[in-house]
Amino acid sequence: MSICVEVSLLSGRRHSESEKGSDSLTLQIRRVQLRRAAKAFAAILGDGSVATWGDTMRGGDCSAVLHRLQNVQQIHAADHSFAAILGDGSVVTWGLPEAGGDCSAVQDQLKNVQHIQANAAAFAAILGDGSVVTWGDAARGGDSSAVQHRLKNVQQIQASVSAFAAILGNGSVVTWGVASIGGDSTAVQDQLQNVQHIQACRYAFAATLADGSVLTWGDANQGGDSSAVQDKLKNVQQIQAAPSAFAAILGDGSVVTWGHQFLGGDSSAVQNELKNVRQIQATAGAFAAVLGDGSVVTWGLSSHGGDSSAVQAQLQNVQHVQACSSAAFAAIVGDGSVVTWGDSRYGGDSGAVQHRLKNVLHIQASATAFAAILGDGSVVTWGDARHGGDKTAVQARLRMVQHIAASDGAFAALLEDGSVVTWGNAVLAKVVIAGPSMTS
Image 1 (cartoon, rainbow, N blue to C red):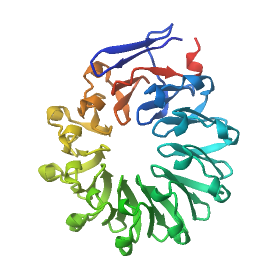
Image 2: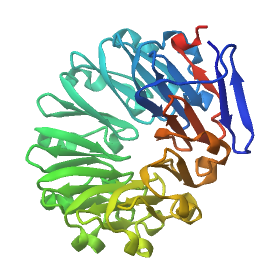
Image 3: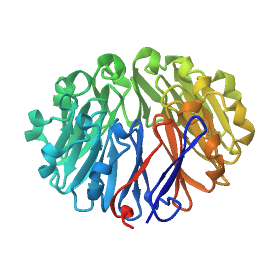
Image 4: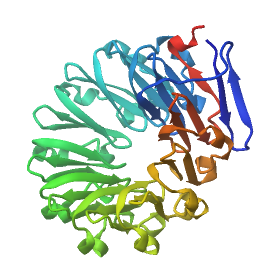
Protein backbone atom coordinates (compact mmCIF):
# COMPACT_ATOMS: atom_id res chain seq x y z
CA MET A 1 0.00 0.00 0.00
CA SER A 2 1.38 3.43 -0.83
CA ILE A 3 0.61 6.83 0.49
CA CYS A 4 0.59 10.23 -1.11
CA VAL A 5 -0.02 13.20 1.15
CA GLU A 6 -0.57 16.70 -0.12
CA VAL A 7 -0.45 19.57 2.35
CA SER A 8 -0.77 23.25 1.54
CA LEU A 9 1.81 25.63 2.99
CA LEU A 10 1.36 29.31 3.78
CA SER A 11 3.04 30.28 0.54
CA GLY A 12 0.31 28.50 -1.38
CA ARG A 13 2.82 25.91 -2.58
CA ARG A 14 1.75 22.29 -2.25
CA HIS A 15 4.05 19.78 -0.64
CA SER A 16 3.84 16.06 -1.32
CA GLU A 17 5.13 13.00 0.52
CA SER A 18 4.84 9.67 -1.29
CA GLU A 19 5.29 5.96 -0.69
CA LYS A 20 4.96 3.40 -3.47
CA GLY A 21 1.54 2.02 -4.38
CA SER A 22 -1.79 3.85 -4.49
CA ASP A 23 -1.89 7.55 -5.23
CA SER A 24 -4.11 8.86 -2.48
CA LEU A 25 -4.26 8.89 1.29
CA THR A 26 -7.49 7.72 2.84
CA LEU A 27 -7.53 7.94 6.60
CA GLN A 28 -10.38 5.76 7.76
CA ILE A 29 -10.76 7.54 11.09
CA ARG A 30 -12.39 5.39 13.75
CA ARG A 31 -14.98 7.19 15.88
CA VAL A 32 -13.82 10.47 14.31
CA GLN A 33 -10.93 10.59 16.76
CA LEU A 34 -8.61 13.47 15.91
CA ARG A 35 -6.40 14.70 18.74
CA ARG A 36 -4.17 17.76 18.85
CA ALA A 37 -1.15 19.05 20.70
CA ALA A 38 -0.18 22.70 20.41
CA LYS A 39 1.57 22.13 17.08
CA ALA A 40 0.63 18.65 15.97
CA PHE A 41 -2.26 16.29 15.23
CA ALA A 42 -2.80 12.57 15.72
CA ALA A 43 -5.62 10.45 14.31
CA ILE A 44 -6.72 6.85 14.89
CA LEU A 45 -7.21 5.00 11.62
CA GLY A 46 -9.81 2.35 10.92
CA ASP A 47 -7.34 -0.50 11.44
CA GLY A 48 -6.24 0.81 14.83
CA SER A 49 -3.03 2.37 13.57
CA VAL A 50 -2.18 6.08 13.85
CA ALA A 51 -1.46 9.01 11.55
CA THR A 52 0.43 12.04 12.84
CA TRP A 53 1.37 15.35 11.31
CA GLY A 54 2.69 18.72 12.42
CA ASP A 55 5.85 19.83 14.21
CA THR A 56 8.02 16.71 14.16
CA MET A 57 9.76 17.66 17.42
CA ARG A 58 6.47 18.11 19.29
CA GLY A 59 4.40 15.09 18.42
CA GLY A 60 4.01 15.35 14.68
CA ASP A 61 6.30 12.38 14.02
CA CYS A 62 5.51 8.99 15.56
CA SER A 63 7.87 7.02 13.29
CA ALA A 64 10.09 5.92 16.19
CA VAL A 65 7.18 4.01 17.74
CA LEU A 66 5.16 3.22 14.62
CA HIS A 67 5.74 -0.53 14.97
CA ARG A 68 3.97 -0.43 18.36
CA LEU A 69 0.99 1.71 17.36
CA GLN A 70 -1.52 -1.03 16.59
CA ASN A 71 -5.05 -1.52 17.91
CA VAL A 72 -5.02 2.00 19.35
CA GLN A 73 -8.15 2.80 21.37
CA GLN A 74 -7.55 6.34 22.66
CA ILE A 75 -5.09 9.18 22.09
CA HIS A 76 -4.42 11.99 24.57
CA ALA A 77 -2.26 15.08 24.09
CA ALA A 78 -0.06 17.33 26.22
CA ASP A 79 1.28 20.53 24.65
CA HIS A 80 4.16 18.80 22.87
CA SER A 81 3.54 15.07 23.11
CA PHE A 82 0.96 12.29 22.72
CA ALA A 83 0.02 9.15 24.66
CA ALA A 84 -1.94 6.31 23.04
CA ILE A 85 -3.82 3.59 24.92
CA LEU A 86 -3.70 0.26 23.08
CA GLY A 87 -6.30 -2.48 23.11
CA ASP A 88 -4.35 -4.48 25.69
CA GLY A 89 -4.31 -1.52 28.10
CA SER A 90 -0.67 -0.62 27.54
CA VAL A 91 0.54 2.85 26.51
CA VAL A 92 2.75 4.21 23.74
CA THR A 93 4.08 7.80 23.83
CA TRP A 94 5.90 10.09 21.42
CA GLY A 95 6.86 13.75 21.13
CA LEU A 96 9.11 15.89 23.32
CA PRO A 97 10.61 13.37 25.80
CA GLU A 98 10.88 15.74 28.76
CA ALA A 99 7.26 16.85 28.28
CA GLY A 100 5.65 13.40 28.40
CA GLY A 101 6.83 11.94 25.11
CA ASP A 102 8.91 9.30 26.90
CA CYS A 103 7.21 6.97 29.39
CA SER A 104 10.00 4.38 29.51
CA ALA A 105 10.64 4.93 33.22
CA VAL A 106 7.10 3.74 34.05
CA GLN A 107 6.42 1.50 31.06
CA ASP A 108 6.23 -1.66 33.17
CA GLN A 109 3.54 -0.06 35.35
CA LEU A 110 1.34 1.02 32.46
CA LYS A 111 -0.95 -1.99 32.29
CA ASN A 112 -4.74 -2.12 32.09
CA VAL A 113 -4.88 1.66 31.58
CA GLN A 114 -8.45 2.95 31.52
CA HIS A 115 -7.97 6.68 31.00
CA ILE A 116 -5.23 9.29 30.63
CA GLN A 117 -5.29 12.96 31.61
CA ALA A 118 -2.68 15.45 30.40
CA ASN A 119 -1.54 18.88 31.46
CA ALA A 120 0.95 20.99 29.50
CA ALA A 121 3.96 18.76 30.10
CA ALA A 122 2.92 15.59 31.96
CA PHE A 123 0.47 12.68 31.88
CA ALA A 124 -1.50 10.82 34.55
CA ALA A 125 -2.96 7.38 33.77
CA ILE A 126 -5.76 5.73 35.76
CA LEU A 127 -5.33 1.95 35.87
CA GLY A 128 -8.04 -0.68 36.18
CA ASP A 129 -7.44 -1.05 39.91
CA GLY A 130 -7.93 2.68 40.49
CA SER A 131 -4.26 3.50 41.01
CA VAL A 132 -2.39 6.17 39.03
CA VAL A 133 0.86 6.24 37.06
CA THR A 134 2.46 9.57 36.06
CA TRP A 135 5.30 10.66 33.77
CA GLY A 136 6.65 13.74 32.04
CA ASP A 137 8.00 16.91 33.62
CA ALA A 138 8.47 15.86 37.26
CA ALA A 139 7.91 19.35 38.68
CA ARG A 140 4.68 19.80 36.71
CA GLY A 141 2.96 16.61 37.81
CA GLY A 142 5.02 13.93 36.12
CA ASP A 143 6.19 12.76 39.55
CA SER A 144 3.38 11.77 41.92
CA SER A 145 5.54 9.83 44.37
CA ALA A 146 4.75 12.16 47.28
CA VAL A 147 1.04 11.27 47.08
CA GLN A 148 1.24 7.83 45.50
CA HIS A 149 0.08 6.07 48.67
CA ARG A 150 -3.14 8.11 48.56
CA LEU A 151 -3.94 7.53 44.88
CA LYS A 152 -6.30 4.59 45.30
CA ASN A 153 -9.75 4.03 43.78
CA VAL A 154 -9.32 7.13 41.58
CA GLN A 155 -12.47 7.98 39.62
CA GLN A 156 -11.50 11.14 37.73
CA ILE A 157 -8.47 13.37 37.16
CA GLN A 158 -8.40 17.01 36.07
CA ALA A 159 -5.40 19.15 35.14
CA SER A 160 -4.35 22.77 35.31
CA VAL A 161 -1.35 23.83 33.21
CA SER A 162 1.13 22.26 35.65
CA ALA A 163 -0.79 20.28 38.28
CA PHE A 164 -3.29 17.45 38.68
CA ALA A 165 -6.31 16.85 40.92
CA ALA A 166 -7.80 13.37 41.37
CA ILE A 167 -11.23 12.53 42.79
CA LEU A 168 -11.24 9.30 44.78
CA GLY A 169 -14.11 6.87 45.22
CA ASN A 170 -14.94 8.29 48.63
CA GLY A 171 -15.30 11.82 47.23
CA SER A 172 -12.02 13.15 48.58
CA VAL A 173 -9.32 14.78 46.43
CA VAL A 174 -5.58 14.28 45.96
CA THR A 175 -3.44 16.93 44.25
CA TRP A 176 0.17 17.14 43.01
CA GLY A 177 2.33 19.24 40.70
CA VAL A 178 3.23 22.92 40.99
CA ALA A 179 1.86 23.93 44.41
CA SER A 180 1.05 27.55 43.58
CA ILE A 181 -1.25 26.67 40.68
CA GLY A 182 -3.25 23.83 42.18
CA GLY A 183 -0.76 21.15 43.12
CA ASP A 184 -1.28 21.87 46.81
CA SER A 185 -4.85 21.74 48.16
CA THR A 186 -3.99 21.59 51.86
CA ALA A 187 -5.80 24.87 52.62
CA VAL A 188 -9.15 23.27 51.69
CA GLN A 189 -8.29 19.59 52.11
CA ASP A 190 -10.56 19.02 55.11
CA GLN A 191 -13.52 20.47 53.19
CA LEU A 192 -12.91 18.44 50.04
CA GLN A 193 -15.47 15.76 50.82
CA ASN A 194 -18.24 14.39 48.59
CA VAL A 195 -16.67 16.02 45.53
CA GLN A 196 -18.71 15.38 42.39
CA HIS A 197 -16.68 17.18 39.75
CA ILE A 198 -13.56 19.28 39.34
CA GLN A 199 -13.06 22.04 36.77
CA ALA A 200 -9.65 23.51 36.01
CA CYS A 201 -8.56 26.83 34.62
CA ARG A 202 -4.94 27.41 33.69
CA TYR A 203 -3.81 28.25 37.20
CA ALA A 204 -6.41 26.88 39.64
CA PHE A 205 -9.07 24.27 40.37
CA ALA A 206 -12.74 24.49 41.37
CA ALA A 207 -14.49 21.48 42.93
CA THR A 208 -18.27 21.10 43.00
CA LEU A 209 -19.52 19.23 46.07
CA ALA A 210 -22.61 17.05 46.42
CA ASP A 211 -24.51 19.89 48.12
CA GLY A 212 -23.90 22.21 45.14
CA SER A 213 -21.27 24.33 46.84
CA VAL A 214 -17.79 25.00 45.43
CA LEU A 215 -14.24 24.91 46.81
CA THR A 216 -11.28 26.48 45.03
CA TRP A 217 -7.49 26.40 45.31
CA GLY A 218 -4.46 27.44 43.29
CA ASP A 219 -3.38 30.94 42.28
CA ALA A 220 -5.59 33.21 44.41
CA ASN A 221 -5.59 36.01 41.83
CA GLN A 222 -6.54 33.76 38.91
CA GLY A 223 -9.41 31.63 40.14
CA GLY A 224 -7.96 29.90 43.18
CA ASP A 225 -9.77 32.11 45.71
CA SER A 226 -13.58 32.24 45.59
CA SER A 227 -14.03 33.61 49.13
CA ALA A 228 -15.56 36.89 47.91
CA VAL A 229 -18.46 35.00 46.29
CA GLN A 230 -18.53 31.89 48.48
CA ASP A 231 -21.95 32.65 49.95
CA LYS A 232 -23.40 32.82 46.41
CA LEU A 233 -21.97 29.50 45.24
CA LYS A 234 -24.96 27.33 46.03
CA ASN A 235 -26.76 24.80 43.84
CA VAL A 236 -24.03 25.04 41.21
CA GLN A 237 -24.91 23.11 38.07
CA GLN A 238 -21.93 23.79 35.81
CA ILE A 239 -18.62 25.66 35.87
CA GLN A 240 -16.91 27.16 32.83
CA ALA A 241 -13.27 28.24 32.94
CA ALA A 242 -11.27 30.92 31.18
CA PRO A 243 -7.49 30.76 31.66
CA SER A 244 -7.63 33.06 34.70
CA ALA A 245 -11.25 33.01 35.89
CA PHE A 246 -14.31 30.83 36.49
CA ALA A 247 -18.02 31.28 35.81
CA ALA A 248 -20.58 29.07 37.57
CA ILE A 249 -24.14 28.54 36.37
CA LEU A 250 -26.51 28.08 39.31
CA GLY A 251 -29.72 26.08 39.46
CA ASP A 252 -31.84 29.19 38.91
CA GLY A 253 -29.91 30.10 35.75
CA SER A 254 -27.93 32.93 37.29
CA VAL A 255 -24.13 33.16 37.17
CA VAL A 256 -21.38 33.69 39.73
CA THR A 257 -17.86 34.63 38.64
CA TRP A 258 -14.46 34.91 40.30
CA GLY A 259 -10.80 35.11 39.38
CA HIS A 260 -8.83 37.82 37.62
CA GLN A 261 -10.96 40.96 37.77
CA PHE A 262 -10.21 42.16 34.26
CA LEU A 263 -10.13 38.75 32.55
CA GLY A 264 -13.69 37.63 33.25
CA GLY A 265 -13.66 37.24 37.02
CA ASP A 266 -15.88 40.29 37.56
CA SER A 267 -19.35 40.16 35.97
CA SER A 268 -20.92 42.84 38.18
CA ALA A 269 -21.61 45.17 35.24
CA VAL A 270 -23.94 42.59 33.63
CA GLN A 271 -25.07 40.66 36.69
CA ASN A 272 -28.70 41.70 36.35
CA GLU A 273 -28.76 40.41 32.77
CA LEU A 274 -27.39 36.97 33.63
CA LYS A 275 -30.65 35.09 34.03
CA ASN A 276 -31.74 31.74 32.62
CA VAL A 277 -28.23 31.09 31.28
CA ARG A 278 -27.90 27.86 29.27
CA GLN A 279 -24.36 28.02 27.87
CA ILE A 280 -21.10 29.86 28.62
CA GLN A 281 -17.99 30.06 26.45
CA ALA A 282 -14.66 31.75 27.19
CA THR A 283 -11.72 33.32 25.38
CA ALA A 284 -8.41 34.13 27.08
CA GLY A 285 -9.93 37.13 28.84
CA ALA A 286 -13.72 37.16 28.48
CA PHE A 287 -16.94 35.16 28.76
CA ALA A 288 -20.08 34.96 26.63
CA ALA A 289 -23.33 33.55 28.05
CA VAL A 290 -26.24 32.35 25.90
CA LEU A 291 -29.57 32.93 27.63
CA GLY A 292 -32.74 30.88 27.37
CA ASP A 293 -34.30 33.41 25.02
CA GLY A 294 -31.36 33.12 22.60
CA SER A 295 -29.73 36.44 23.47
CA VAL A 296 -26.10 36.79 24.59
CA VAL A 297 -24.43 38.56 27.52
CA THR A 298 -20.67 39.21 27.54
CA TRP A 299 -18.15 40.46 30.08
CA GLY A 300 -14.41 40.63 30.61
CA LEU A 301 -11.70 42.29 28.54
CA SER A 302 -13.38 44.21 25.69
CA SER A 303 -10.59 43.46 23.22
CA HIS A 304 -11.00 39.73 23.93
CA GLY A 305 -14.75 39.64 23.24
CA GLY A 306 -16.03 40.98 26.53
CA ASP A 307 -17.95 43.73 24.73
CA SER A 308 -20.53 42.59 22.16
CA SER A 309 -22.45 45.86 21.99
CA ALA A 310 -21.60 46.44 18.32
CA VAL A 311 -23.45 43.26 17.31
CA GLN A 312 -25.94 42.97 20.16
CA ALA A 313 -28.95 43.56 17.93
CA GLN A 314 -27.91 40.62 15.75
CA LEU A 315 -27.45 38.27 18.69
CA GLN A 316 -30.99 36.90 18.68
CA ASN A 317 -32.07 33.26 18.63
CA VAL A 318 -28.47 32.17 19.17
CA GLN A 319 -28.06 28.41 18.95
CA HIS A 320 -24.41 28.09 19.93
CA VAL A 321 -21.37 30.25 20.66
CA GLN A 322 -17.82 29.17 19.83
CA ALA A 323 -14.76 30.93 21.25
CA CYS A 324 -11.26 30.98 19.85
CA SER A 325 -8.79 30.59 22.68
CA SER A 326 -7.34 34.05 22.23
CA ALA A 327 -9.74 36.91 21.73
CA ALA A 328 -12.92 36.40 19.65
CA PHE A 329 -16.34 34.74 19.60
CA ALA A 330 -18.57 33.39 16.81
CA ALA A 331 -22.28 32.71 17.31
CA ILE A 332 -24.53 30.57 15.12
CA VAL A 333 -28.01 32.08 15.04
CA GLY A 334 -31.32 30.42 14.22
CA ASP A 335 -31.25 31.06 10.47
CA GLY A 336 -27.82 29.43 10.14
CA SER A 337 -25.88 32.65 9.78
CA VAL A 338 -22.98 33.72 12.01
CA VAL A 339 -22.31 36.76 14.19
CA THR A 340 -18.74 37.52 15.33
CA TRP A 341 -17.13 39.93 17.76
CA GLY A 342 -13.85 40.49 19.59
CA ASP A 343 -10.39 41.11 18.13
CA SER A 344 -10.86 41.59 14.39
CA ARG A 345 -7.40 40.14 13.66
CA TYR A 346 -8.30 36.83 15.27
CA GLY A 347 -11.78 36.15 13.91
CA GLY A 348 -13.82 38.86 15.58
CA ASP A 349 -14.64 40.31 12.15
CA SER A 350 -16.11 37.90 9.59
CA GLY A 351 -17.21 40.62 7.19
CA ALA A 352 -15.10 39.37 4.28
CA VAL A 353 -16.91 36.00 4.27
CA GLN A 354 -20.25 36.99 5.77
CA HIS A 355 -22.13 36.43 2.53
CA ARG A 356 -20.97 32.81 2.52
CA LEU A 357 -21.86 32.05 6.14
CA LYS A 358 -25.27 30.52 5.50
CA ASN A 359 -26.72 27.26 6.78
CA VAL A 360 -23.79 26.86 9.20
CA LEU A 361 -23.92 23.59 11.13
CA HIS A 362 -20.79 23.77 13.26
CA ILE A 363 -17.88 26.09 14.04
CA GLN A 364 -14.42 25.12 15.23
CA ALA A 365 -11.62 27.48 16.32
CA SER A 366 -7.86 27.54 16.47
CA ALA A 367 -6.19 30.07 18.77
CA THR A 368 -6.73 32.91 16.30
CA ALA A 369 -9.08 31.72 13.51
CA PHE A 370 -12.42 30.04 12.85
CA ALA A 371 -13.66 27.35 10.45
CA ALA A 372 -17.37 26.76 9.79
CA ILE A 373 -18.93 23.65 8.25
CA LEU A 374 -21.93 24.48 6.06
CA GLY A 375 -24.94 22.32 5.34
CA ASP A 376 -23.56 21.31 1.95
CA GLY A 377 -20.35 20.02 3.54
CA SER A 378 -18.16 22.93 2.44
CA VAL A 379 -16.06 25.06 4.78
CA VAL A 380 -15.69 28.80 5.35
CA THR A 381 -12.72 30.22 7.29
CA TRP A 382 -11.75 33.61 8.66
CA GLY A 383 -9.33 35.18 11.11
CA ASP A 384 -5.53 34.96 11.22
CA ALA A 385 -4.50 33.59 7.81
CA ARG A 386 -1.27 32.17 9.22
CA HIS A 387 -3.12 29.96 11.66
CA GLY A 388 -6.00 28.57 9.62
CA GLY A 389 -7.99 31.63 8.64
CA ASP A 390 -7.11 31.14 4.96
CA LYS A 391 -7.91 27.79 3.35
CA THR A 392 -7.59 28.99 -0.27
CA ALA A 393 -4.92 26.43 -1.15
CA VAL A 394 -7.14 23.49 -0.15
CA GLN A 395 -10.51 24.96 -1.08
CA ALA A 396 -11.19 22.53 -3.91
CA ARG A 397 -10.66 19.53 -1.64
CA LEU A 398 -12.96 20.68 1.20
CA ARG A 399 -16.10 18.86 0.12
CA MET A 400 -18.46 16.74 2.23
CA VAL A 401 -16.67 17.67 5.45
CA GLN A 402 -17.96 15.73 8.47
CA HIS A 403 -15.80 17.05 11.28
CA ILE A 404 -13.08 19.61 11.94
CA ALA A 405 -10.39 19.53 14.63
CA ALA A 406 -8.14 22.46 15.51
CA SER A 407 -4.69 22.88 17.00
CA ASP A 408 -3.40 26.27 18.16
CA GLY A 409 -2.35 27.12 14.63
CA ALA A 410 -4.07 24.84 12.14
CA PHE A 411 -7.17 22.84 11.19
CA ALA A 412 -7.78 19.26 10.08
CA ALA A 413 -11.01 18.39 8.26
CA LEU A 414 -12.36 14.85 8.12
CA LEU A 415 -14.19 14.19 4.84
CA GLU A 416 -17.05 11.78 4.17
CA ASP A 417 -14.70 9.32 2.43
CA GLY A 418 -12.47 9.17 5.52
CA SER A 419 -9.69 11.33 4.10
CA VAL A 420 -8.25 14.33 5.95
CA VAL A 421 -7.39 17.80 4.63
CA THR A 422 -5.17 20.13 6.66
CA TRP A 423 -4.33 23.82 6.43
CA GLY A 424 -2.79 26.56 8.55
CA ASN A 425 0.66 26.78 10.07
CA ALA A 426 3.40 25.68 7.68
CA VAL A 427 4.73 23.02 10.04
CA LEU A 428 1.94 20.81 8.72
CA ALA A 429 4.20 19.45 6.01
CA LYS A 430 4.38 15.76 6.76
CA VAL A 431 2.07 12.91 7.64
CA VAL A 432 3.35 9.76 9.29
CA ILE A 433 1.22 6.63 9.00
CA ALA A 434 1.94 4.09 11.73
CA GLY A 435 1.11 0.45 12.24
CA PRO A 436 -0.37 -1.95 9.66
CA SER A 437 -1.12 0.86 7.18
CA MET A 438 2.58 0.93 6.30
CA THR A 439 2.44 -2.63 5.05
CA SER A 440 2.21 -3.04 1.28
